[in-house]
Image 1 (tube, rainbow, N blue to C red):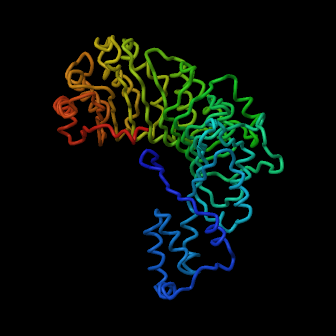
Image 2: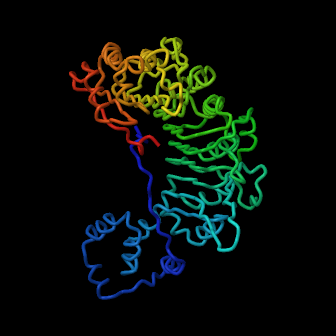
Length: 464
């Protein structure tokens, strides 16, 4: 199973100047054949390939190696062009033209990021124009990349093609083969307005991928939108056909925040194939009563992950109004987690009220771990790993049973799960982290005695 939360997608690409690109693209090579190059060419092929593999993340070094000899140029090309970041201030058309002229270089590209390059000219006002991509424009680029596996769209404007200016009809849309990973990060529509769900799903259906990452997006949750998706999507994909194995939805916002989860996951339920989802990192900010978000997320989990889901991350915010309903297992039953019979790992992130709120000085109506226990009661016994992340805790709250009752959680875990292999309590402490850790270890005695308890600090990068 692919484990998205252990990946870091930082691929450095140092742009090659046009003279060097032209030189590398010449069919006859034109690379120097110095005495040094001749000597290096006599090395065994496995040693030469090892040199390139060791320097594969160092683009300047690979570029220098490509100028040693013709044979080294040929060996350097797959490393130079395997992962590209192309940032432009207004259009990616020149990159599309480059691929058309140099198809022998395009076949080396496995990972591509299309982004925005801010341009600042002294004495001139700052421009807010960004590159705009539609499924048709993307198709014109990606169809020239026969080995493309991962596509990242970062800080650009997206459109579904219906009202996009400059969307050329000279390049008809071609349904691409399935990508390994599609990432949409900090994208919007023209004038940096929130990204409509219609446009988002037109891109997702046009570019099917096994892994989808939606990061730092401001969404416009207009409804109804799925019929518009099917009309506007150039791919004309039918509902319930996307075979997505892993879905990450992190740092997604909307002015209509009360309906964000309900409408977003209802859209995914309508486009994903049944029983395809193996990993879900959900965005679900739940403050007190949120029946629509709960039911919609539960319907999506039941539809896409009933038999397939192995890993689930479910973050939710806890407000002071949380009370008796959340303490009952039936409140959480609408998530249908009991039907995920192959679920192996669960991460629950609980955000406590911060001290910035006056009412945060008062404890909630029940210990917050009581809500976690009610949620756990709906989990299948197949669970092997549980991670509980607590934000904005301090020693006073850890030690106060009105806020947290980790001892009750300790008892419930061993009662409900007979085959639990690891329990990790992650603390994002406001202060006194060492004291918080010690109190947690002292409170959760049974898990600690079984050797399955791990208490540590929050890895902020891992929770992006």
